Amino acid sequence: MNDCQFARLGVVITVAILLITTGASTALAQGSTIDAQGSPDIELYTPNNQVTPGTETEFTIQFSNDGEFTDGNERDREYVTTARSVVTSIDAEDSPIIVKTGEKSVGNIPESNPKSVPFDIEVPDDAATGTYEIEVDFEYTYTSKARSGVPNENNIQTTQSRSRTEDVKIKITDDARFRVTDINSTLRVGEEGDITGEIQNIGGEDATNAEVQFPTEAENLFPQETAVAVGDIEAGESAEFRIPIEVGSEAEAVPKRFDLPVSFRDENGIRQTDDDPSFLADIAAERDAFTIEAADRSITAGSSTTVDFTITNNRDETVTDIEPKLFADTPLSSSNDEAFVQSLDAGESTTISFDLAASATTPKTYPVTVDIRYRDAGGDSQITDSYRLPIDVSQAEEGGLLGSFGTIIVSIISLLTVGGGYVWYRNQ
Image (cartoon, rainbow, N blue to C red; front, side, top):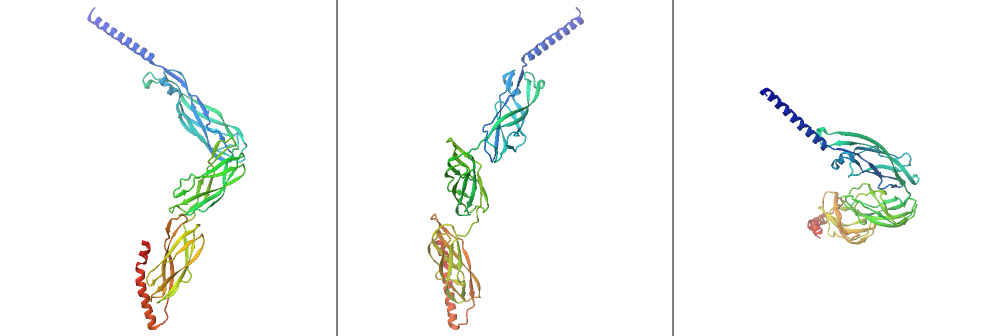
């Protein structure tokens, strides 16, 4: 065998070895390739399928996937059992129910993650009780076959789409349900007040051991009670309620909407809750604790007099230990600037008197202020803002030396009395 023949033989042997090696590798790869096969299996559930007439609520449908895995490696199960790009809608044409929600996108539903899909529905007041069927349409895609034993770029996937229609049941019951009527509010900024009203059972069954709840989270509103018992309420009957509330001084004087859930026992003795009742109540603007008026607000320059003031309790409660104090600036002064009233009922008035002097000055109107310290119905000490009142000073008649001397005396009194009066009172 010459060299040329020997070289040819080497090439043939090399090619044969490569072919054998490649074939073995291909066979090995093919032997390790497994086709995963399966499909999703969607089931529908309704966790709470009871509704009542005259309500708007959410009707929730739960999508659960119990996939079918027919072939392949278990680790590839998710590839072929997941429902992808799920879209659904409901149709209630065969029932009195009105569907408010259109088509909804659900996303992917793997076996291990059920999805709850809420739909807004309305149940008319005149809806007949009974059990009805709601049609649920849904569609999705899935991978029915996947090969995972080879590099990703060689994966074989078969995508399928599926549309299905299933029926679920919804039950319209005539259980006890409630609405709020005859609301009256005495709420006012900076005061305690009440919301009163009636809760009416508009359902077809009696409710026992009912109570209204006031779970407000509104700022500057502080309910003194968050649950008030109202007793038994037969179908078609009403019960009164009262909720005491303190309104903070930072609250706004605006109408507010409140929820008023009703907890009760049904005819089977099972505790139920109707979360739908709500109402609107007004919060009035802050008001002065008292009104005050001067009976005669005129004084002659260079003279003194007694000025009567009428004060009225402007709050809806009895107040006690009422201490009005007068403050006057030059040219006005007072040598008797304090008064005391033991108590005033809501809306009650009384008259208090202060001495007032005016030095010789330009005739015109000058202000005095009155502060009132008192105790509210809870026994807490309060002090009002200053009430600013006008005093008319008129021209003194010609009186010679005596008149001039009187003017000097009044001026001296003014200087001596006005300086420390305000500081002393506030320190008290």
